[in-house]
Every structure is written in structure tokens, then in C-alpha cells.
Amino acid sequence: MLNLSPTTELPDKTLRALDVLIVNEHEAAWLLGRNTTSATGTDTADVTALLDLGPRAAVVTRGAEGATVVTRTENTETTPATATNIPSPQVTPVDTTGAGDAFSGAFATWLAAGATVVDAARRAVAVAAVSVTRPGAQPSYPQLDELNDALN
Image 1 (cartoon, one colour):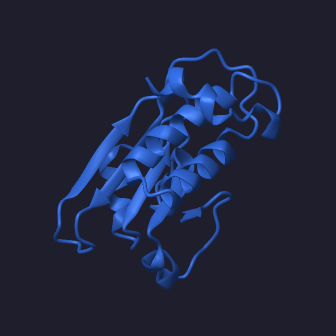
Image 2 (cartoon, rainbow, N blue to C red; image 1 turned 30 degrees about the vertical axis):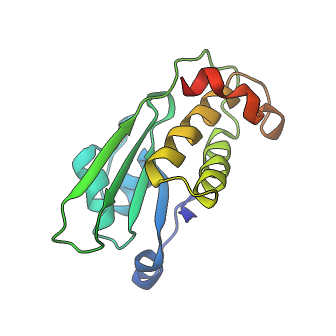
């Protein structure tokens, strides 16, 4: 798993070695050579194009809109990709500092525990959503028992 934040040039072999690539919309646009200044720098076709760079799955975080996960059942360019949009629980943000880190940490935790990429992303979106309702970075990260409302 690699969260490419901040963006940097990577060798092709690094991208091909990834199980999961995590980027936000602007990082995805940068990776794909898109020149964008819009708040939604990528669409589903762009997210799917991330798989052409080599990772077996890609997750594009979209802030208050949640995340998009794209996977292939087989890691070949001829296998159709499946995109899953994961909406974020609607919250009133207080401080977005650390939301991306909250997402990545939760994603890695759930993936290591055996969750699918989509389920790990669903839980990570909930963790990030809860984290922005509190000030600070690490102190804003919710405990497991605080996630029930965000996951339902």
C-alpha cells in the first residue's frame, strides 16, 4: 500500500509492485498527467486509468464526497475494472488536518485485518469523516466503538 502524498516521481516497477495505491483527486490527476484545478480533478474513467500504471487496486479520496475504489479481479489490462463509490457520512467539519492520514491508517488497519479493499475503504471513509469533526490531527481520530454511527 502506498499513499502518494505528496506526489513524487516513481519508477514504473514501484507502481507495478503495489497492491493498493491511495491518492486524493489532485494527486490522481497529477499521476495521470492531467492539468486540473477543479475540486473534482478526476472522474471514474480517470480512477480506472490509475490501474494502467500497475497497482492491483487504487483508492481516490474525495474529501466530503468519500472515496472511489477501483479494482480488477485479475491484474491484467484486459480484465474490466470495477469502480465502487463510497459516500462519506455527512458531518460538520471543524478541522480537516490529518483526515488523509486518518483514512490511510484506518485503511491499512482494516486491510491487514483481512477486509477487502472496498470494505477497508468504507471503514476508512468513516474514520476520516469522524476525524474532521474534532480539532487537531491524531487526537481527532476516533476509537473503534465511536464508529458505529458513521458506518451505519
